[in-house]
Image (tube, rainbow, N blue to C red; front, top):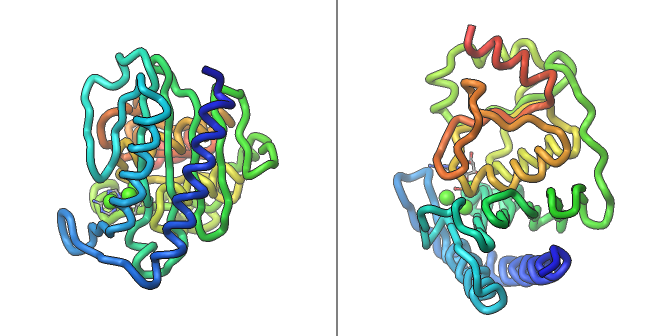
Length: 258
Ligand code: 2AM
Ligand code: CA
Ligand code: CA
Ligand code: CA
C-alpha cells in the first residue's frame, strides 16, 4: 500500500472530524475531568477518537492503535504492520476555554519506523503533514523549508507545565537568554510554531500521543527532539521533551543541566 493511499484516507477523516467539532462545539459539549481539575476530556475528544479508530479498523486491517482516550496497546514498535497513535483533541483545555489553539493529531509508524504524521490546527484549518514516507513536510499544499536555525538569543521559547518549571530551575536562565517565553497550551500547536520557524524551542512534559506526530514532522525537517537530559526520547513513555533548532538545543541543554 502506498503512502498516498493512507494519506487520502487520513486527510478525509481529519476534515470530517473538523466538521463534527465545528458543528457540536457550541451546542453539545460535555466536559469531565480525568486526573484532576486541569485535566479535561469532552464528549468530542472521545467521539473523534472513536471515529478515527473505526475508520482505521475498516480500512487498514493490519493495524495497531494507541489512542489517548481509549485503547493502550503494548509491544507497539515491534509490530510489522501500521501502528497508529491518536490524539483526537490536543489542547482540550484550550478547546473548552478558548475554542481555538487546539489540534487533532495522528502519527503513523510502519514496521516500527516513523512513516507519516498529521497535526491539524482545526480552527485555522491548517494541516501540517508529511514525514519519511515522502521525505518532506507540507502546510496544507505548500512544502515547507527546513526551519531557520535560530540561536537561542534570536528565538522565542515555549515552556509548558508547572512540573518543568518546578524541577528544572535553570529553565529561568533559558528564558532570560532567549527573545522571550510563550505558552500556547497545545503540544501540537507548539510543534507547528517550531516547524514554521516561529519559535526556536519547546520544553514540556509530554506523553507519546502529545509528541510523536510532532517528532516525526520536526525530525523530517532537521529539528532536534530529545529529552531534557539530552537522551533519545523513548517513543512509548512520557518524558520531559525538548524540541529545538540544533543551535538552541545545544545552548539549552548546557543551561538547564549546568
Ligand atoms: P491534551 O490536551 O491532549 O491532554 C497542555 O500544556 C499540553 O500538554 C496539551 O498538549 C496537553 O494535551 C498536554 N498534556 C499532557 N499531559 C497533560 C496533563 N496531565 N494535563 C493537561 N495537559 C496535559
Ligand atoms: Ca488529555
Ligand atoms: Ca495531547
Ligand atoms: Ca488530547
